[in-house]
Image (tube, rainbow, N blue to C red; front, side, top):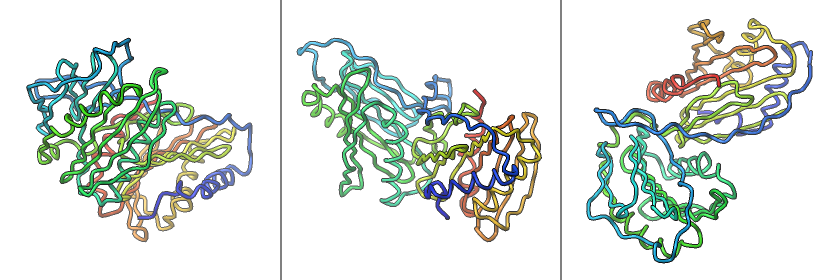
Length: 372
């Protein structure tokens, strides 16, 4: 599949040129650039009789409290924690507070010094070594990099295929040392995150090793989960919309004076989702927005043989195009609209052979879509 245009930033200028050209060169006031908004957490899941609800979460380390030397360190609980999904079991520190979500469990040190999280994601296929690394680095970028002073070491890959990423960051004004293990069994990627106040790392690291060594997994049970069911909320520039997107998809953003392009790639590079927000200060009619959309599909996405199979106006003012390209062997769905001087387009593109496979991810995104 052709890599996303955002990976070649120079092509972003084509968006500006194409849309400005359609607007007959009538350029108005330039909007102030909006910085990329940090991802926000999905609300925690709440238990139901059938297990837990579909929403997933990454949880942040609780605020630290004062500790004494006698409180540092831990021992493992006698009982093994078994996740309700059956995807994994693990021995967690005794007397730590645990909180279970549909894709994870967290354990909080009562002293506030340390925090542990174990999660799993059904990615639906077995990654190559390169794809596993891409997944891990995407999680790092979409989660850990949102904390201040994030500094990761180079990823270390063991013979087993497990990836270790060691990093330091700041939480609530305290330096943190954090390391994460990423590994895959069947179609399921497991992650273990170990957090500790940096000045107490030596007191906790051996205990972390015991916790990790106690892990037992059942990837067959994990594969029953929804595809990429661990997501965060992304908010587009100027808060024109927001939606949930997998932590394991690579996010890139490219900004020009009047346009911002946000792209989200799957680790196997078989599909991506992209949003374009364009505003040159000129009023844009919905009919002109339609011309914009077709121009972008043909020129920017390089699908000159685009075949629109459905064009549906929606009650909320958006227009939905369902399309395909035989020459590029891709299927796509694009939503576009105009809001005064702003043109907005959200597009999903997938290799023809992967379209059906990734439909659940796209549907989950659209189910979460809203305007803040």
